[in-house]
Image (cartoon, rainbow, N blue to C red; front, side):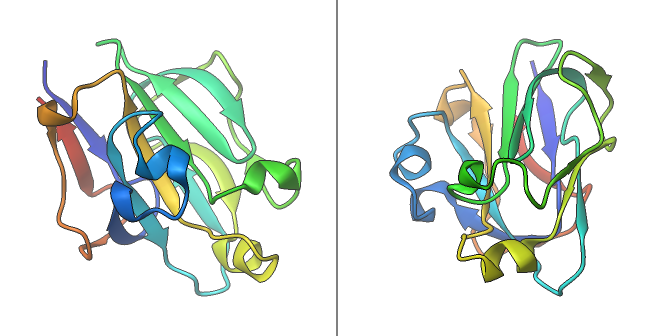
Length: 152
């Protein structure tokens, strides 16, 4: 199985170990990377990084389950669950099929940061061994739709 996970929003790659949240940094959810989003004051629409079933969606996070059985979690900011959906606009429903590049959530990383939250976005592959991932170099600038990581 080979799976490419595309970048869901523009920013800079951060090593998952450098995310200032122990749940992500210690890979309790799974291995992956994070994207520190561009903050230019504008709304950003986060796109599906893979095709599959939208297994879970909350305003601040979503999981897509691919046909190969790999779950990909995109988490918008740290501790943003406490916002109870404020500042997030959903474009898809739980249980629906999404194609890579489909809009899932719109938010404003600048506004989230102004509220005191870190807008960094972990992109996690669930139930995948880390040695099966090809990860980008931290500090790499990525645009929406670029290949972010791959599962081999």
